[in-house]
Image (cartoon, rainbow, N blue to C red; front, side, top):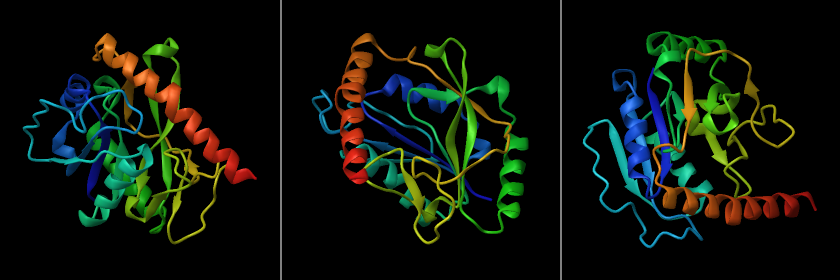
Length: 221
């Protein structure tokens, strides 16, 4: 069983290093890092200036494009690397070491692949967001047979299987299983500088969310 982590980032070197430090690479085959400027992001450069990655399991690629395009890139790489399972973690997130059991998690993924009989599904894993006062969320971040998946409608929140019409939820996304996994990640802006947080919020709330909401409304017409 081959496991990959997929990350998109831009000008968040401190956050990315925090994520990398939290990962036990003994259980990860490859970590795809797709780095580049997002449209309408206030950053000056097309890549993260000064970024140094000294880990032979990290695949780095510079790509400046829309959120969904950058995310699709690490999904496409899963086919090239024959990846069985993908965990999606962004550079403002990191593995919760106190609530993650890597050997058990790997076995749970292997069991899930067998139980699904070769079908590609998206599963929830738990996350803790420090800005929500300790609220635990379910996030669709574990993708089984990710090379069969594709982001659709120009949105990074809508995805489906390229070959099969499996169950979709009310938002048009792949069915997210209710299995519980021995893995949890934390979402935190504590690694980011104040200016980096301002740039991030301006991009997310000032452009990305309105942009993707407009796409969703047009699809409903």
